[in-house]
Length: 544
Image 1 (cartoon, rainbow, N blue to C red):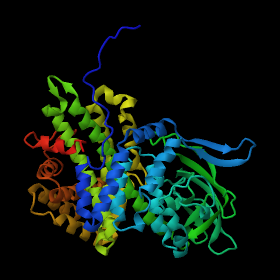
Image 2 (cartoon, rainbow, N blue to C red):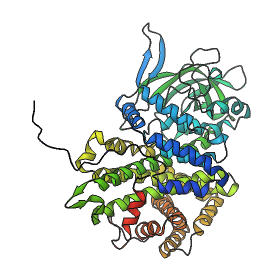
Image 3 (cartoon, rainbow, N blue to C red):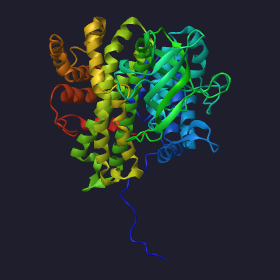
C-alpha cells in the first residue's frame, strides 16, 4: 500500500452548484432596468431556474463532454448510399434541447422576448458556447423570412417552438426546427457579392435549383438554411430545406467538417449544392437586403456570446482568488491582484450592460431605436468581441499554472474567445459597416448622440470623450484608414454613458478614469490605485 505523501490544501473548490443568473449583478440589474415591470416576476423566475441549471454539476459535465467528443461526419451509410449526416455526442443534444426549451429561439413570439432571451443566452452559454450557434441562427432567421409572409406563416411557428425535435424529417412533421445559414464562399469570404453559386428557376413559381458551394456552413444537421445564390436577377436569398416534403433528402453534400481552433462541439462544414431544391425569399437581386436582418441579429448574438464568455472567465478568476492563499493572505485581498480582478470586472460589466441595452432596443422596435441599433450594433460587435480574448488570457493567468490545465476549463474559454470577433463579419467589416451608416443614414448618428447625451454632465471624463468624438466625426476625410479608432471610441463612449447612468459609482468612476480619462496602462491591472477597487471586485464575485 503506497504511503500518502501529501494532503491537498489551498486549492479553490470548483465553481459549481450556484445560480449563474443571480450571481451576475450587472445582468440582474439590466433585466430589472429594461423589462416591463409586469413581466419581471415571470422573467426572474425563468432566469433563476435557468441560472441554477447552468451552474449545476450535471450541465457543466455536459459542456465538457460535448467538447471532448466533437461531431463526426458520416457521408455514406454501410451500403454506399450518400447520407451526409453529422453525429453529435448525447451531451450536445441535451444542451441544445435545454436551450430551445428555455426560449432561446422564441424571442419573436412573446413580450419582452429579446431582453429575456438575451439574458438567458448570456447565462446558458456559460455552460457551453458551441451549441449557441444553431440557437442563434434559428432565432435570427425569423426577420429574414418575414419578408415573405407566406414563408413566415409556414416556418415561424416551427422556429420559435420550445420543443427540440432532433433528427432529419420533413419540417411539417416536426414539433420544432433549427435553421442555419450559408453565405460565404471560397473566393469571396465576406464579399458575398462575389458568390458564384447559381440559382436556376424551376417551373413552380418561387422555386429554384441551386448549383455551387458554401465555404462555411455551421450546424449542418439543421432542418433548413438561408443561403445566397446568383439568380437571373442578381444575388438572391433562398431557403434550402434539408428534407423535402415527400420525405426525400435534399441534395446537401457535406464535403468535410472544419478543424477549428475552438468551438469544438459545433460542426462547421463545407457543403456542395448540385441540383438542390430551394425557395426564393424576397425578390431576386435583393439577397443582401433580405438576409441583412438575420445578420444583424446574429451580430448581436456575437456580442452576447462574448459578454457571456467574459463573465464566466471573470467569475472563475474572482472565485479562484477568493479561495487561494499566497504570501500570508487570500489572493483577492492582495492590492495588485485586486487591481487585475477589478479591471477584468469592468470590462465584463461594460460588455453586459451594452449588450442588454441593445436587446432592449430590439424589443422597443421604434424608429428611434432602430436608428440607434444601426450604429450601436456594429460598434458593439467590433469592440466587445475584440475585448474577449485579452480578458480570457488575463483571467486564465489569475489561476496561474492551474489555469493552463484543461481540467480548469480556462483553455476552452481561451480557444473560444476569438470566435465572435470573426463570425458574422470580422473587425474591418464591422468598421466599414459603421462608416456606411454614418455616411448614408444621418438619423443613426443622431440617435446615438441622443443616447450618450443622456449622461452628459455626470462625469467630466465622459464629457471630454464625447467632445473629442464629435471632433473626430466632423472630419470624415480619409476616414477608412482610421475607422477602427473611430469605432472603438464610439463603443467606449456608449459604454461609459451607460455605466454612468446605471452602474454603481465605483464602477462608473473606474471605467471613466481608465477607458475614457486615459489613466490606464497597456495591460489589465493598471487602474488608478486610488479607486475603490475592492467594491468593484466584490460586485463581480459569483456568490448567490
